[in-house]
Image (tube, rainbow, N blue to C red):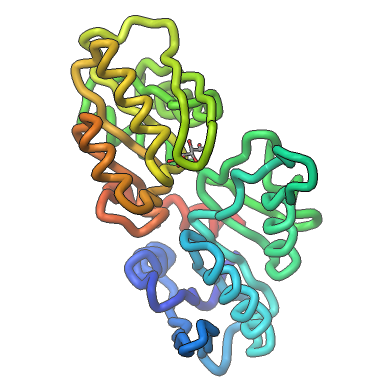
Length: 293
Ligand code: R5P
């Protein structure tokens, strides 16, 4: 795709500027006003080119999804015939099956909803665990899932030579394996049992951790409980240090403080979600996918 404009929201200006610079295209902002009752008023540039790239990360998902529901048809009405959505963090991907009878499979419904409004979607490390690709949940639309794992792996290899990459659950195997193979680092995964939003149990893999510099790697950290439990277990097993590297730094509430209290040394993330821990920029990776789309 050869977009004539990058459209982004005014609260994601830093990522938008980096992506526009990588693509060497113009950047325009969607201005937002929040009414006292919680509704949003959006203002887009009054005339849009035929091909538009729209950047919208979906951390704090619910109000951002509503804004997208308004902005996408509005962009079409203002002249955008083709819209490629870049959502570095794609929310609702972890709800990927009905865990109890009657539970909505949000992954399928949110992906289908977005697919009905855009011509394509680029995202980073979506939580694809029970399906192989985004195409399975975005019928008829192309979805590109990039991975930050090689870039995070490069960062880790530089900061902690000889690190053991440890995924806190089996689902993280895809990320630790990719990062480990790219940069010659050992990798393994734990076994996780989730008992509630903030209650998880993590069992270490059967391998010696004494004296190893462990880096916990996962796609997303939300409450941080998964990483806290894995860090406590690794340190109890004799790990010489525990650092954390994640693609999506949600870190809600006191998650970061809890990680530090558990003995975690450094916390690193990609800039898929704007966060103080972001050290790995993704603009060039995303720009490459836009050019190839
Ligand atoms: C789910 O399996 C994900 O990969 C993460 O491990 C999970 O979402 C982390 O959640 P929390 O930080 O709340 O434990």
